[in-house]
Image 1 (tube, protein in one colour):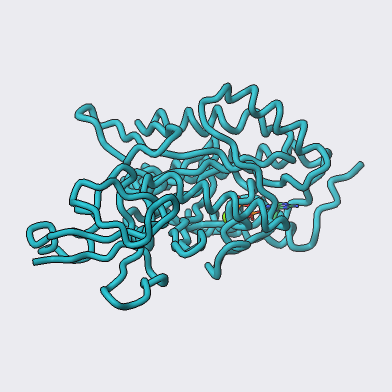
Image 2: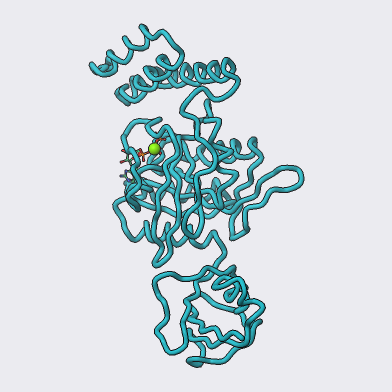
Length: 332
Ligand SMILES: Nc1nc2c(ncn2[C@@H]2O[C@H](COP(=O)(O)OP(=O)(O)OP(=O)(O)O)[C@@H](O)[C@H]2O)c(=O)[nH]1
Ligand SMILES: [Mg+2]
């Protein structure tokens, strides 16, 4: 069966042949990859095009002594409770996930290499906003030079794996290998992102398994769990399943290791709009300090409302706070 190349593909190919500069060649080749009909008979062509693109991008890098173009600039300004960078193979569903949960101007297509620069967006977990950054794909043959620097300054990483992809079981190992090469360890739990003396970054994260609505997704999930052997938790999502998206938002929030505390002024209702975030295991004094920098010094006592407490219970400075507590501060 012929490859049945489309007019758009052939035009991109003409553009590639006529390209005079390196950037024009990369642009045209990226378009050829996007426009190539994807089926069994074009698999080899697809692989060849990707190899050519990787080679061209490497050449661009050596000539200019740095990333030629489309590189992710590190340092997206952080907003909300924390910043989570979404990483993953071309077409894994990174942009679709952020698009389903926010107003971020992501581009979603059925073709690989669609996202060319990082796009931040704000998602909600209940009353907390979390910043998610969509990124250009992590490709085994080519890595955007700005991607790992961008990741290093984030609070957490989420690796996107497509449960409907034939190579879904290989995706985690090469994503983790690319991270290892960049001296980044993504670990389960709520560790805060740190850099060791040897220059290795450790940050919390998990795997988000997309396309959970695919007919073979549950069996793929079982194999994926076996392949990961508990190294990272897996959160399955489908962009069409709001319950799974909510679970994703909670999993992101849980990475930050914080609890939500609501401030109440004497004689008034608690301010439920904007909780203060206090590290898990923190005390009333840690909360007081977040309300006002002088309150650590001026703290007298506090009253607490929350599950399992007497309403308005009087507590001292070392009282451990819990998620959802309402606290009224009394200062000298
Ligand atoms: N059915 C289904 N389709 C999905 C899901 N997530 C993503 N897709 C589809 O998968 C395709 C690729 O999604 P993208 O979000 O563009 O993938 P990406 O990882 O951003 O791809 P690049 O930017 O090229 O790296 C699109 O056709 C999406 O509509 C999902 O949960 N279920
Ligand atoms: Mg994308």
